[in-house]
Image (cartoon, rainbow over all chains, first blue to last red; front, side):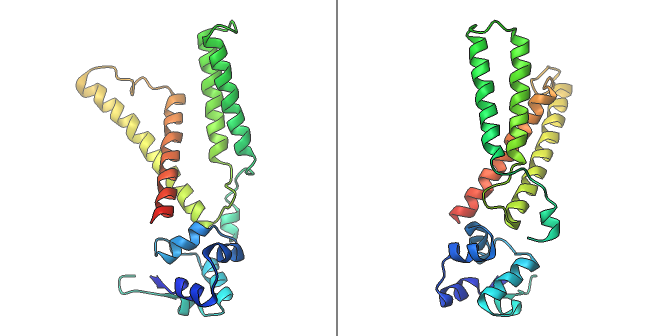
Length: 66
Length: 137
């Protein structure tokens, strides 16, 4: 699964730390999601979509091997 | 955090300090008794120290971190699984070693306390490795 989290974060100009604080997770979690090492739960994905004001599908995209 | 994750009950973070204090107390007790400053039998000292360390490690393990989220829970569960599998592997390896090579290794004679302490060590090594890996990549 790929995601546009880093891009969206850059557009909004917020740090990993600030984003983590907004949705109540650690900075490491945001970093792991951005690096595709961790797939977030539905709740976390919805929280992220709310912060960036985007649909979950716009933030996360399935790949062929998923 | 969803309801299932909230059901994953952990002790408050300040319990980590209590656990470290207990380890400190048992270490002081052990030093005092081995240097004969306190006249206590060796067996009693070992029994006390091992059990306090075991309880401290358990408290450390089930105390929450400052930031507890779904990734932390996932790593924690993986670490528990790793520690459990390592404990079983250690026990089986000890039995097989003694059966094939007919000698009494320390693995065979391992007490439940020692096995549990080693399992906690495997847990911490796993947690440390995964957290460090997450930070560095």
